[in-house]
Image 1 (tube, rainbow, N blue to C red):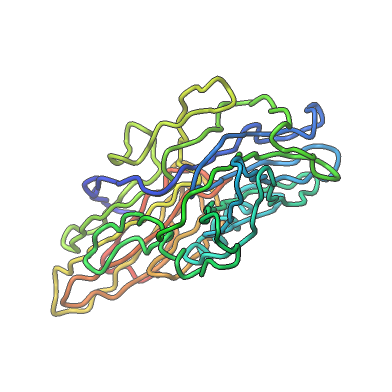
Image 2 (cartoon, one colour):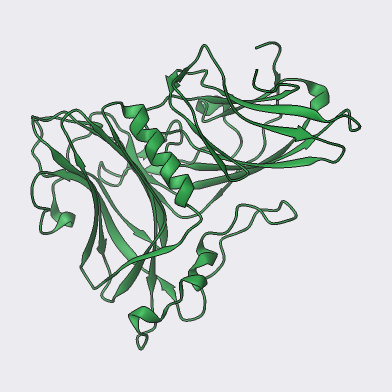
Length: 363
């Protein structure tokens, strides 16, 4: 790949609500007492759920998430992006989930009204041998006591999910809710069962974790910006690297709410969405310059997803021996702004090395 110049590490800003991360036990088998819960915690307001579980039992399973109203009043449940994948290949399941999530992430949709103690179910029917992977983002909203359930215009809730940056390239903070609305609370349970769902998902016993990769993390998004000059040649930025090589603000410590409240890290930041604003300066402004964007999975292999200026790209199988060319822009005399969003899909390996190559045109 030639000489690669490291990009000075940008400082990332954590944003958004909590991330529920469920990846243990990753493999479900017949030695486990099902129905069983893989993870459970209580959240408020806006939150994201990432789960990745494989059915190695002798029969089909229902795998997914149950959201139970944990208040004494009615709540409205909205979706702000829903991605699900199902495949015998874990990395393909993760790629399908992430691509579907990114395609729907800027849309707010009403799901249901939950009375006190009522549960909303989002599950996948998972054949033997398949992996179920999902990235699901929700918001729980309460209304004034005298309000009609159907009286909340969806347009008011679009502010829950702003574009990552404004016209000046500044971060857009999460705004407050419109007057009269509040944030609700729920118990979130990821679980597996066969047949009919359990009557009360909040009481389903927790399965023992094979490895400590489940927990609740403070924020589900990262925002960062950096500048590239074509004069520096091929440049590289590592994303979801090891902790010691991470960008400032990239990793946050989480808490495992079901295993004694121990502190954990989501190594790879699965379920975390990276939002980059990239300013590219052409060192030869009087000459149009092709500028290639590539990703090199230096730590392993998998199927990956990139969203560049609203264009969704899904990779073929890529391993550490190759880089994937996922987009190209043509640079002119003025600086070019690129918005890039990515995450490490379930079942694939990081780090993802983002490569920026002046003059590369995909050939």
